[in-house]
Length: 282
Image (tube, rainbow, N blue to C red; front, side, top):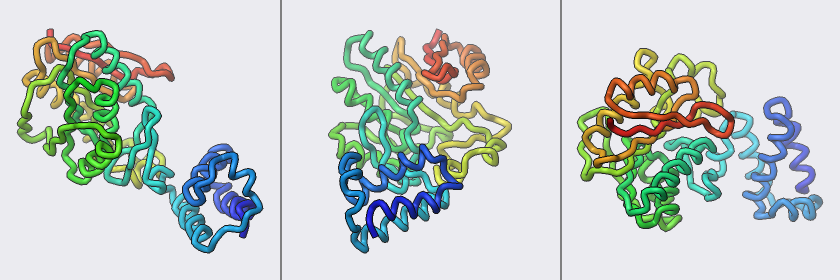
């Protein structure tokens, strides 16, 4: 079977499942993973026979796509701020909007112009913490997560990307004790009410870690409140708290932070949605 024939076979299998434009993009990634051919080589090699092992891999990957498994988990990697991170089902797949949160923190740190202590709460794959360390090499960066499996992945990424990070395994909902005060605390916490789960994409609700996504229906701001309470104790003087937020929770979180004696501002992402908040104690 040639590359051209396997492409036809996979497209026929998935044409009712995945949009044609998206499928072409996914196919390009799968072909590069299986054959190591880049996009130009994939055109040149269309009529090249594939090995039995390659055909087996293509069949396995296409079945996983048919079962809604995200391409990032199939390949074991995802891109964040132009860098490849290892990912698995213990960590969230990094999102483009989170890159904008990192950029805001870097923008603030560059204005301050001195080494800072930074803490990323709910670090997952480590993409926020590692990106901050790479952009701000003189700063000290820590990453905290409740999940030992997630921290193992974060540690692997830090080694691969040559980033020195302090990793902390703790549950911020239960008597967290931190080793330092911090100039910046940043978090992309769980914020999706459980009632929204049934309407979400299969790729998300069936594969990404629920612990990193969902909050109780009756307390959707649970993590924002908890992290803000922690920040009141752990932020250094003039310290800053940065959050990624659900686009329709901005007003509620601003009100919460005001009640907790924070000054706060909201920022829209590149799609025009309220997506980030920066806060400091009054």
